[in-house]
Length: 606
Image (cartoon, rainbow, N blue to C red):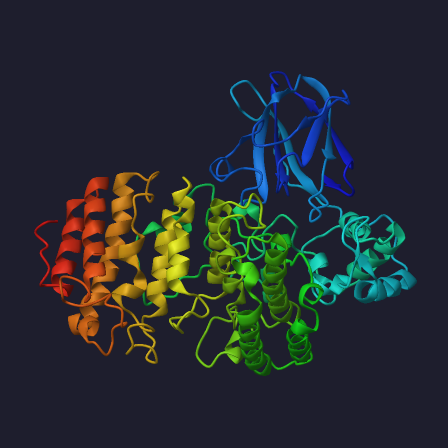
């Protein structure tokens, strides 16, 4: 059910509760803040406002702040709402808007018995996209004009704004059709921006008449990894595998990462991240969209970005567009130098303006890659062999909250560091899915590996295991610098102990829910590949001053400034492993590696 419109909008569903029914359980997408929704049973006139105090969330939302946290879709029970056996009608109400949202979607309803077991069968939500009447040619034409020219307001009765519908969506509105936004939502959003219901219907007619297929849903994250995504037609890839392929537990990821169940790491392969389910749901399409047009905030100051995009959109050659995209991103980087105050500002309007400018660049990149069918043409966009899926820039990576918003008091959700860091992790993993680097490391593009690796441990920091993601990120990092003759001779761009970050990533928040034996099997296999690569390169590769990063990360000297930080980290990791009960042979492997790389250090203490 879509509970969308002005505050006070309601929607109802009826079902028969079986014997033993006790409490309500629901799955809802879009509860980005507390008390946004209320529910009533059998039109009793008594409303229960849903919030973090009276709802009990399923994992992982139970560890991630519930409403206002980083998850768009939440599953939870409402212990204070009694469901008795018999015919039941639930009515949901949209209470209050933050002047960004116009409602939420109820994806599933169930009842629990006293033991907490669901009593009703679970069904897939079905969304009716189109209206009941056919679209007239005159309405389609009128909708096209409104989409690009209609004067809009900020909110139902707000002040006029300069932006048009096409400024914050794909230019032709194809994103709304592709990601399954219904006519009901399109009409309601049009009314939110000051248009009439009739005008909203005309815009919906224009959207529905587009050539794009309707493949995704507003609650299924774009590009969510899952089996078969790599073989899916490129034009369908953006729809993602759906929330159904979000791994129920971190350890389930290994079922798809290893061939035939054999625990093995091979840095010379190219691990396909598009097909491997992870426990992290990626950002939904609404989280890709800007909250306002940059032209609204920055006026003609931002116009060069728009002009460059329009020039790219007029091209048809993938190589030409790729070159222009690099110039476009460089221009934006120059623009950011003078316009990025919102990145650290406590002023929410300044945050919204800057964050929206980066979001605008991101959705325009999506528009070029998806609607211009460049996904699948990556080889024409790169000067070296790549997977056809790969995106040619890293704007998705740079659009994370880590790069665009202050850690505390930001505009997203509850404004907490938890939401900031977890959402950054989501965006970094999205970039990993969009580009796996193909054994090619080009500095911080398309992925800045230390950031990806550091944020891959974020879920575990808050009690949501992410060990598999952390290790897979390490494997991809190692892959990216292994085997490319053009980057083989430089430790920053090539393969080096500091580039895999393994010593910095193993922490006490990892492996909490793993059987120790299986944990050791994974670590042992990784260390076998890791040490094998180091020994094959030879110690001189890591101590040659011409090949090392000039910050003292690798050296044979036991103390600062040459190598001290990494010697200490190596020893610290051995101590953590010992504390966690990791098998002694793994610890000895670490000791032997330390003695090989830094023979002057005292390893007897470990």
